[in-house]
Image 1 (cartoon, rainbow, N blue to C red):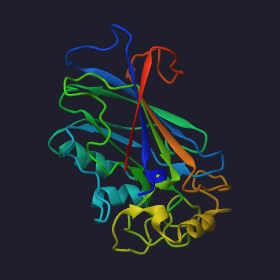
Image 2 (cartoon, rainbow, N blue to C red):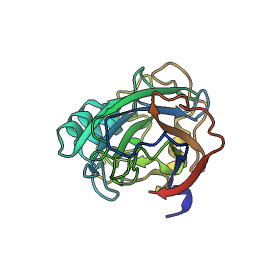
Image 3 (cartoon, rainbow, N blue to C red):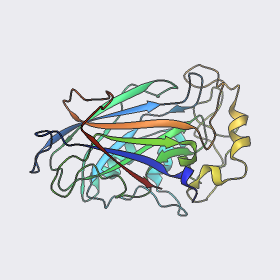
Length: 265
């Protein structure tokens, strides 16, 4: 897989004395989701976040998605996924960003209370890309985003950079703007043609660019005309995770920092 198709995770570990605890205890996190598309560009549905011991498998490339993820990828519904997550063994705190769709140039924040960071260390996230039939972003590697170490120490602040190349196609509905594409005015997002396929990277499909271009000029459910779409190389979203309360939240980090870079699918 080309390096451009990998989510980029920037793990900024502070070395200031006293900001890192040596023992596991309940911690509060604040997660910010930013839509980096311009105003009039693609939108994200409210984003789901959950912490687990690394055993919760959101999806696997090349395999049909679960019914819960299908609901999110086709109509932006997070309730089925939230229910499945909270009922699964090894899971902990979970939340969805408030305030409705996250349009271009806007952001949302949500708080998580982590009761035992030493056991629920790994992040799962998911959000639908709209308008579309079944495009979404999320992490296929259940242990790929490690927010806490084995002792329960926070590994952040952490920034997750998401590019167009990171968008997934659920493979559950045929990509056709006139047939079930959700969040378009005049289109019933629940009536798309079943594809019966498997999850795969959207830009691996030869028709990806033509499909996105077919959405241009359409009026979205929030009421604006879609005037731009993204390419595989474009940054489309950023997730920033900090401890809360924190005076460092979402501010530029200067001095006394160590930057480690990891890349994952």
